[in-house]
Amino acid sequence: MREEPETRSTEAGPQPGTSVGVIVPYDFALDRELWRWVPDTSSLHVTRTPFVASPVTADQARAINDPEPVRRATRDLLVPEPGVVAFSCTSGSFVDGVRGEDALITVMAEAGAPRAITTTGALVTACTALGVDRIAVVTPYVDDLTSKLEAFLAAYGIATVHSVGLGLLGQIWRVSHSEVVRAVREADRPDAEAVFISCTNLSTYDVIARLEQDLGKPVLTANQVTMWAALGTAGHAAVGPGQALISCALPDGGRPVLRVVPEPPPDDCAAGEDTDEPTSVMPVLHKVRVRLPDESGALARLTAAVAGAGGNILSLSVHGQDSRSVVDELLVGGTVTGDRLREVILGAVGGSGPDAVLVVAADPHELVDAPTRALDLAVQSRGRDGGDDGLLQGLAALLQADEVVAVPERPHDDDHLLALPAPSGNWLAARREWAPFTVTESARAEAFLRAATASPRLGGYDIVLPTGEELSAGAATGDEVVELDALLRTCLAGLPGEHEMIDWTAADLRSVLLPPGGGCLTVRTGDGTLVGLASALAADELDPTAAAEPILLVHPLYRGLRLGRWLRRKFAEYLTA
Image (cartoon, rainbow, N blue to C red; front, side):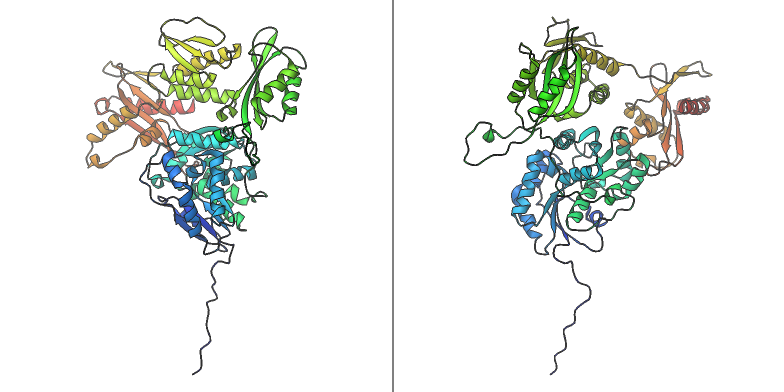
């Protein structure tokens, strides 16, 4: 009997080394989005970490990046012989800082990955490819996780000029494109060179190109940078029409270059401890304050001394002190220790007294320039309730004070205590042991309080109704969410239909009060009750060129009094003013 020749399909599977292995969290819901960046010449092999009963917090991120599950997941991906294994989780790769991300890479490599990347490492690589070191950040996280991302980026010299967190604890994949667009526009700042949208469970592919066209800058997303870096490592170009990053080549080496690591070394690796094996010195970030004579050449001697000690000056500001001296503050990165830095500076510029040269560990958030930081803190303080509490927190961050407390009477001033009057009638007392306050810091604090407590400017339009009642109109502040909810329900209650089935979120109401690129006027009675509102919403949040749609609300008790006609006219004047 003749044996039939074996037939084989002309369609072969991926060749060894050309595909990408992907480790995603157990709750990942966007497999299809990952594939949209993949060219026909490559393929994905996806596996998940074990289930964890936890909300989206730092604890969940640490459970996802636990070494043993990551090791097992890596081995599960090796049979198809991928060219690279990607740990595709943003929070899981930044939650433990630079050392944590390095440890993830090591675990995957030891498990057999030919090459390994992480989402946050890919973000830093993407910023390097684009020449970006100042970004705005959008996250779905609570504030604690967002802060850890900012600290991770600062370790690589990437400053976060502004961030917006959605505060979600789960089901992140349900966030709509319009919510993503709204958050990006809220986070963007003129001095941000790019915007990053964090979390691989946030759908972004369809908004990137439109946002880049609208903002005039690159928009990076977690899934995008992961696929771009992984495919580039495997020798492929990602697919993403209209996305700035996709046209960039992967930098040589593929791994990000560490510029500043603001993390202290582990206790068991403290300086001076004898070990059998050589240890590498990790870069750190120092804050240096030096009292200098106000004379020519003093600053040149200081900077030369820092450079000679191996320090890298990342920022410098001059504080006025008195007629004969100034205080220079520097942020210095490098492997030089604080004691060595102080010794070298004292030798170069002289000086005496405990405050002549001060060197302390720096917070990476201080890499954001002082004016931007002060403005952000003022805005955040205005948004907090609770009397002086917001001002206390804002001042403490602005002055890097050990504490700021409210006291009923003015305390006695000394070099390490700064007293400022609070709007409530109390005094705010800031104390800082590590360095005395300067004249410049006192002026900054006073300006901060003025900005944080200034009354918002309103439109100031007034109307007297035929009934003789006086109403006033003013610009919305965004704090009227509860009032707007009540007004909407009152207006709908008088209309036919099953309006009780209609619902909305606080974010929906806030978008009416603070529409992107538009404005909103509120109308109030003499006792402050909200009885009318006019707003302009974008017809299509994905299309910034679409004409705005006006929204007009008038309380049922105030209809028929020509209030709507007056409000429509005044709102048009307000928008063109």
